Image (cartoon, rainbow, N blue to C red):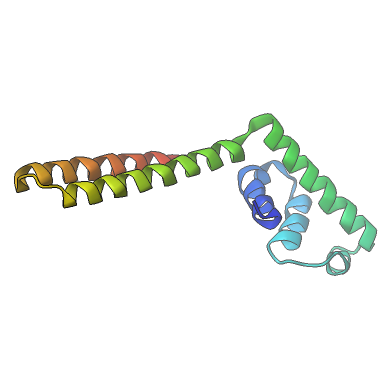
Length: 126
């Protein structure tokens, strides 16, 4: 996973556990893509202090992830959802291509659609 994406997701999951100053600095660094020099100017500190603070915040977020594992569980659920989506799509194609009566075909397609909709709802609740 791309480092910026990982930092964004960690912030999404654990950002509320940071204090307001940490949120502002990390948000500026990750979402606004500010350099350490820009951060230093914005938050009235040295470039080294900005670098250290971003590193400490990132480490804090990674520690939350080690303890709670929300990002890993989310990523695993997303991967499973993608596999399920592909499986449903493949099943859909197989049913449409099969030689069965239209009534049975419609029922199977409706059942497949119901499975997909339910799994999508479950994933969105995560």
